[in-house]
Image 1: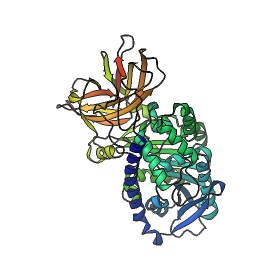
Image 2: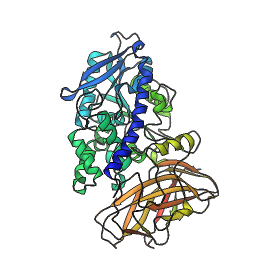
Image 3: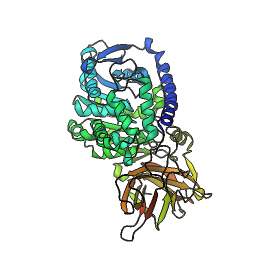
Image 4: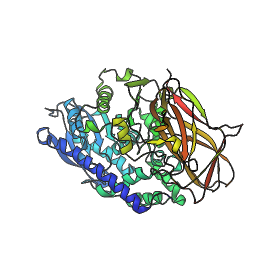
Length: 522
């Protein structure tokens, strides 16, 4: 079941190589400016005496007689401390003291990788302590920001350190388990990339190595341990503390993020009670922020600075009066504003999944979610998502339902939801649901997907399945139709289908099966 350990490591190392090349490039661009820009490279003592490699950028002419808002920025997973220098210099030029630091366990920082565990959160507070003691930072105006790993740490730090008044969490996570184990299914390529990058650029702790080992081995006896481990590292666990602290939270992500899918961000956003903002754009993990790390114009970083300018400096720049949910469709057009997440897909249209359909398992039908990073980047840059010929999908291994042709364009916004009745022939199994935009020639472009795994079911006994597909914004042209495809094998995920297993989907009269499509109000 799933990928062999050798294949998994090969996939991870290939992906990590590309990540490290990009990370090296990110570091080279701003380094040349360091000598003339007043960048100080320092050592900061973190939790337990661990040395954190950091850099400090201050406003020009800062002499200690004036205090400036402080921004603390932990690095992304696997990237060096110079990752944010281009943005740090811009922020310092606009009046911030900026401290960026390499998270423990990576590169030259000491310690081991704890995956946003308690030592990492304590480190963030230690960095704040150091900045207040050694720079002209204002203790009343402190923010944290980061991309990916730094985003997750920033959210968690806000729950534990009330000095933090504003956060920009970019391409991060609020729920770690929902990110890499959604639908009770291991996201193989995503976790493999993290594991490979952590091994190459850092020093994984013994606990982390055991978690990954149990994860890839599908060790169900350790599942609760993994859930507990993930909960300790998820901002959702500390929601009440974040709300009590009242920090202004901005979150931004890509629709196609294969590491931290958008659903978990949207769910968390809806439960925040303080000042908040949610932005979704086309792209994969951290690709929307990438050009900004080179110092180029970038919407994410522009809004990040505006967010801090308002909530740390008190600038009346209007960001607090804009619609707090800002989306950009994968298909075309500009930004769309909404008052909240539930207003995004206010209209629901159900596609009936009628009849009874049986599929066999263990063979990839040709319907796939793509390749981590590559597929969503192609979608972002060229609007080329993964495709499949819907008429040619073998019905022996794939179940297919299609809508009628739409007379007008359908603007899919938000989270499509699958409801069906499943009867397995084995006690465990995995299915993957795909929503496709199908053109006149039957070519389907992937709109969304999600995996679902079950264990401990009675063979031959039906049960209900409710599955949220990954949230998206996609415009289906007039004359096209939507198709729901379900199969059992996808390279993105570990599958749990015993040899020879079959899955039967039915639609009882008293509980009909459907996929609910969220649509923007026209």
